[in-house]
Amino acid sequence: QKEVEQDPGPLSVPEGAIVSLNCTYSNSAFQYFMWYRQYSRKGPELLMYTYSSGNKEDGRFTAQVDKSSKYISLFIRDSQPSDSATYLCAMGIGWKVTFGTGTKLQVIP
Amino acid sequence: DVKVTQSSRYLVKRTGEKVFLECVQDMDHENMFWYRQDPGLGLRLIYFSYDVKMKEKGDIPEGYSVSREKKERFSLILESASTNQTSMYLCASSLLRDPGGYTFGSGTRLTVV
Image 1 (spheres, rainbow over the protein chains, first blue to last red):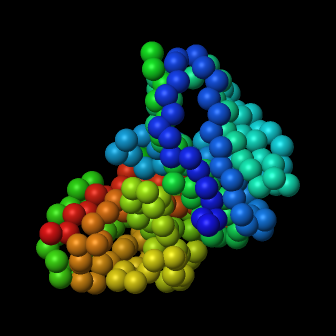
Image 2: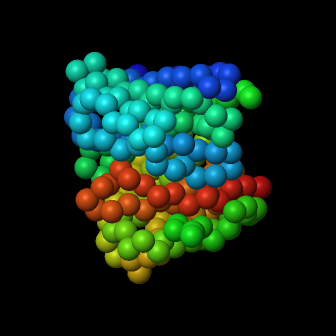
């Protein structure tokens, strides 16, 4: 079993839809949680970074962490074609970060 | 306003060659990392450095070495390139106090023939 599980997709949604991306993990020792967005032929860029359970909002993006269920989510409201990318979840202990394999999202105009 | 710069976007090398991948960051970050990214396998850590001349092995260090002589520069060395090292190589940096808050470079697509 992988330490971090992420559905690879692809996920196709119409413009304006609410998108939900999810990851589950097995290691309860993870201390912090991130979501990265990666456009084709680019390096990942950090979207959200949180240490605690609960919700964190930044514009159209909301990150949710449920440590009791070992589950994290990223919600994208009013999705735009420019949101089309691969989304990577990641979680860490100390300096060690474990990434999910990514979910490919396509937002159709 | 480029923050993490990788020296090459694309490289083609022959089996057995010694290969150098260079990475420079201008954010005064303490931590620097080298990852490789392969379809279906995601990002795998090769090496990590938290200070000049300091290094830690990641998950897949075999066949690689690193050098960090200055805070802003972290080099990845493939001692004798093999075809199974064909991959996308990503350099990243982060602050010591925010270890997961990576800034990535654009990547180097290395093909070993």
